[in-house]
Image 1 (cartoon, one colour):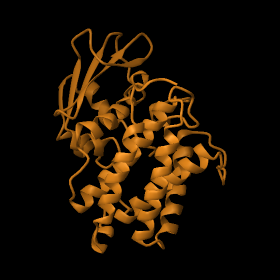
Image 2 (cartoon, helix red, strand yellow):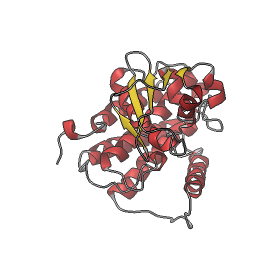
Image 3 (cartoon, one colour):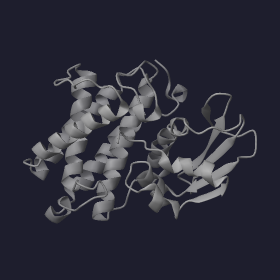
Length: 280
């Protein structure tokens, strides 16, 4: 089994910490805070908590236990898959509205612990059961699938924290793996953008919890790299509090644009704003 240093993005060890923070947060909420609206539009705080429980149950049922329950109709496109998942999410949230917050928290704690235990058993370099579709992959390694699951838990908890005005998850330890995972979607976001070989775009998530990523055009595709060999044609600077909302559709590209600094080829840089790193 590979060591953590061989895994491009290591997140398995962060799941227990993220879950502890979630449970502590939810147990502190007042009845009024459970009903607060969130940037997830139709979902209130309790709905997002229920969605997180659904994520845990799906991981245990499908990935750990090999049980899939209902099967989708023909999935012939990415949009078909998104529509199917959206319906699953809506059905679950509606059903769990009959659950009390204490029951929801107890189930989240129980299933979260089981998920964390299950993740430690995976060969992180082996093929995953599910690909990371928003990155354009047909087959993904487990480390990427697990990192994608981490981004789901991170951004939904952050949505709750913002809705109730509680301190967020904006630390280097917790935020950087989240945004580093999202940046893996940049080549797919630029798949229809043509440019001369060697064209480079620098994307910076500002402050000490962010970093720099470079998107470089080869003869026939875009590649994500850790450094540039030429001067970037476009440089895009995004604050962390804008980035997580933008890439999860919590903030539209039009509204985000006024808060994002683009130097050089503006049209080339603006494509970054269209990246969506969730199934939506």
